[in-house]
Length: 269
Length: 195
Image: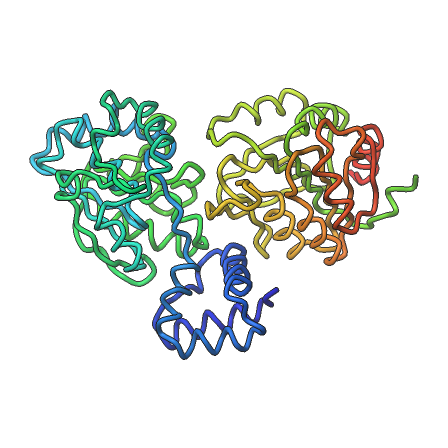
């Protein structure tokens, strides 16, 4: 088990050697991820793990990728997507152009879910989905639009619960245990690395989705990121967070109004 | 039994369970005193729906304030907390909760081990961990971590559990202080109360 001060040493190394700042990540989860990696990669001691991280840039890629959580699925929390369909997309429909930002998109399952919603609302042709993540490796996966076949049954059920009326499998072609989503969806996506800890706002959006990312940050970093989102949102635009995350207690709270009971807020000021 | 001498200053009671554990909680919760000197944190294996049926069910059985945890909630004595579906529940050094949607542990999210280990890390000797009925080996490592950190470990007596596997695994592989039937379990928790 790693000691608190050893965690500090590693985080300092990441910042000093590579410029990755994890010092404002929620510590309990980070510590668990480091312990997990320590045993997965069978380091005999903390010193050896630390040496490897400091001296091997290839290992660093793995380290950062495993430190951050890249678990995601399509149409997670179907009722959230239902509210997006009924309450959000209907309002955005009047816009000449719709810009969406998926912040911390991981391997892209949510981006493809969103593209399907836009397609079914007849809005995809005038939409652009910007999808960013800290890890370039997960973006490579997202960009290909190729996912494992096995969870598609679950995703299809989620899709129907979200109000989907089509045959979910019509959106992809299955082959050798994998599926590839239709080019029409991927054609509206732009993938790029972006670090919420250190990078700035890069555009103005009508909808920002950042679900189950803030839970990994401490309160100070959450506040920074919410401010960044606020600066990146135009008037009457929307911000969507994860099921257990909130705008409450943040400095931008008063500028936003919650949509129904879902974790979606509209910028009113 | 002089249970209340087992631990001087109990700050947190953790209860973990799977199949068959809800019935035990439905007996325990109404038996609790009207105020508690510690926080009670419940981690159950449950369906991945984010609805609040389970929290509502438990709320009906107690007058104590009960909350399904949101990210960064502070741990307040006297409260009952329920781990939300589909997230691991962890504890930070400053006494707040944090959530984590990383890989399942023991096929489970929330995992009892994750919460028990994380809480042991922060509250060590001021902690009581209780493992109830279930068909999974989750919780065993967590109880070991609690014991290592100086806390107290309890399992439901397997003969009284709807599914004996979970408490049995813990008895086999973790240092357990007390093996209690449901009535003894209720008395033990009540005796921890200093409020």
